[in-house]
Structure formats: C-alpha cells, structure tokens
Length: 403
Image 1 (cartoon, rainbow, N blue to C red):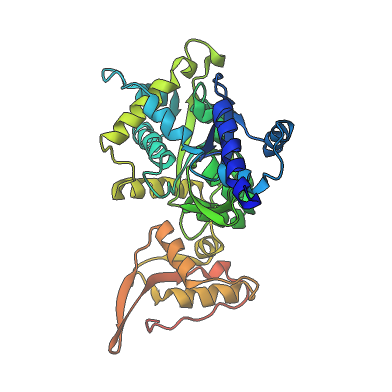
Image 2 (spheres, rainbow, N blue to C red; image 1 turned 30 degrees about the vertical axis):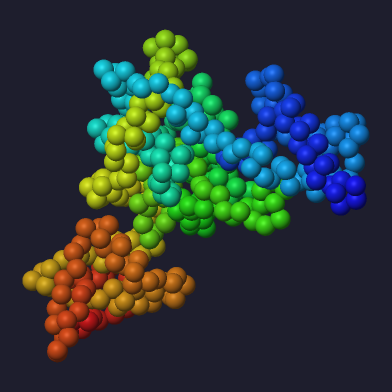
C-alpha cells in the first residue's frame, strides 16, 4: 500500500486506540478539552503533550495533524456544565420558597424591593448561564459601612454546587483574559468597587453589556465566538462609589443593615441548600418568570442610586452659585449651556463643564425645565438666581431677557 494510503489507516488506528481507552469532551464554559478513563468517573483537563507521549510509547509517530484534527472534530463531544447542572436538578418543593428564605437572611433599608430584585437576579443568572439571554447588564450590589460578610454571602450562592468551579473575584476590565472571564465563569464577584476610577466604571459598564467574546479555542487556527455566561455581583464599604455622571442604571444597589451568618451555625443562611435555591430559580425560568427589570423597577433603582453617586462638579457649583426659583420670585431663565459658560467663568476657566451635566445636576436637585419663547423660537431652561455673596469679585449682571 502507498504511503498516502497508510495515513488514513494510522488515523483510524489512533482514533480506535483513544476511543477504547478514553472519553473526551470539550467544556464550553472553561474552554478546556477534558478526558477520563473509560472505567473512571473523574474528568481531567487534557494536557495534549501527555497524550502525545502516550501515543509515542504505543509506537505511533508522525501523528500531529491527525491528532489535532481528531481533537477538534465531532469525535470530541461538546459539554455545557452549567446547563447540565440545571437540567439535573429535581423539581423544587413548591410549598417552599427557598429564594425568599435565603434573601431573608439579609436585611436592607429597602427590603421588599430587595427581595423582589434578588429573586429576579437569581433567575436572570440562570438565563445568562444557559445562554437564554444575550447579556445580564446589571450588577447586583451590596453597600454597608462595616465588614459584615457581604462578599461571603455572594460566594455562598455557589457553595455546594458545581457552579462554584465557574466563579471569579475581581477583574481588571482590560486585556484578553478579562474578556475570556465573561465566557468562562457563571459569576464574577466584584468586592473592590470603592476603588473603581471613572475609567474603570466606564469599562465595567461596557463589560456588563458584552454578549459575545472572540477567542482562540484549543487546536483551532481561527478565533471563535463564545457566548457570555457571567453575571456580576458586587459589594462596597464606601457610600459614594458610583462615579458615572451619565447614569448608573446598570448598578442595582442595596444598603445592608445586617447579614445573619451565625458564624456558619444553624441559625444563619448556611442551613439553606443552594441546590434547592437554584432548582427553584431554574423552575421559575422555565415557567417564564420575568427576568428583566420593568420600567418601575428601573425608576426605583435609579432613585435609590442617587444616594450612592459622587456629586458632579456641575452639581456642586450649581448649589454654590445658584438658587432655583420661579420667574415671579425674580429668577432669570438660563439655558443649560449659559449656566455652563457662567460656571466655567467662575472657575477661572479651570474646569470644563457641559450643558448635559448641567441638566443632570438640575434633575438631581429636583428642578424642572421651563420652556419660554424668544421671538419665534421656544427654548428650555431653568429659572435661577445667582448667589452673589458666593461669587468672587464683581458679580456679573444678568439680563432680564430669557437666554
């Protein structure tokens, strides 16, 4: 037989040898090739070099291309450990509310909303984990001034389940490895939120909205598109940790009063079986439980988040130099860009202010826009008085004409 004819025989011999001795699978979450002995039960991440050495010992040579082709073919079954876990769970006891019980071990300043959002969060994590939604754009966050075990509570969500293998604490939001974390984890726990810079917040927001990740799979020559699996949770001891002036809708923040750990004892949340909690969450998902926040949920969350945001420069300067009022109270109608120009002047042009942030600051203060007519045109702005005592030097005289 020709040399060319020997190649398929060699390939079949290699495949037959491996098929009789091992089971292979590609873990679609960890992005690893895994194998186990036919008679065993424990799966191990495949080290291709070990397999090559074994084949060499068996007398096989010149098999690099054949082995590579085999390992990236349908010979290796795809395995989704997250989906497999949820599908293996028994239907929950419907007389018990395991999610509500677990949530109750954490007391917050907005308990009813917290319990409702906690339930949605768990079901949304299920949906994200099995690729039923493109991305979970929210980070469920705990705030309290003390070190009361916020991080440990989030870690417990996966304890005693296979999901614990697919979790990560903190990512730097830069580089290829951080993107891979979105595909290779079920949960990412951000417990250093107080240290986020404004740039970090912007990067985090971009990560929250990522749905697909491009990466090179084992033995592949080209990049593949992998689905995101990860949902985010976070905790902080610093109240004013939100630094994004353009909005913080992606953060769902709750102020924690207490968490009942009982030091791992029988009266704390450790007595809750997380497999039963996830079984209930998976059941709710299959029953069509709404996982996304409603308009009312978003409005409620944004109202809460105002307490955790750092005040913008515009907000601070408006409070210092302006008093909101009405036309009848002697106020002058100013458009946001005019206020930005004036405040920039008062800062001796050392601070760059924007009309967009002026508008956000006025909304935060609780001042409504008022529309006035200038000739044939209508413009929106605010009636304000300048606080002359706070203005350094001679105050600028404002015209009575709407601007």
